[in-house]
Length: 273
Image (cartoon, rainbow, N blue to C red):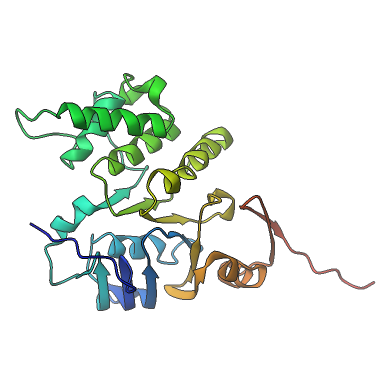
């Protein structure tokens, strides 16, 4: 049985000078990030920057080629990563889940970690109650009995978040949760993500995205990645500046923020006549 170690100033997640190399190609190079309890991080950067790879390391889904990664106080390579997974919720809304189960049934399987529970397994009444509370928190109470195949992509994403939260993880990792959503679906997702800090005060979250407009107002920290390197990491106001984001995406942009939400516009330098 894995012992979850007390939170210290080293953070609940920590990557130190991490390199990842695949088939001789560097994916990450010298990346260092520390995520503390109750912090809400965004990993941003263009395609191929290494964001999902870093998320996979922080979620104990793969080992670094060089450097060290600590998850909940345990160093990867010195712990059975499978034992960490019950404490780390990892949500990929693009997962091609095919199941005849209802929303409630899918969420309850978060207890077992598989949408195909062991034979003769049945959730307790307490687990069913907690699943219903999460379904309500994610705005899906009216769809609890709906079959998975009838859900919109946005509803599926929120159901997967509820499922990941059911085991009460210490960390929630979100890999491009707004991908493919229309405007209404995106805003519904963001609204419910913004409710998580109040419901789970100690929960740390890490969200991967290409788009600043997809960031909830509750994001506290950010990291900018480009070509496998971390250009900046820390409190969100110091990292998400027009100059740094322009450098990260190799495109001149002007950022503005209203009520915690970001807007991005292309910055065109006026040419003198």
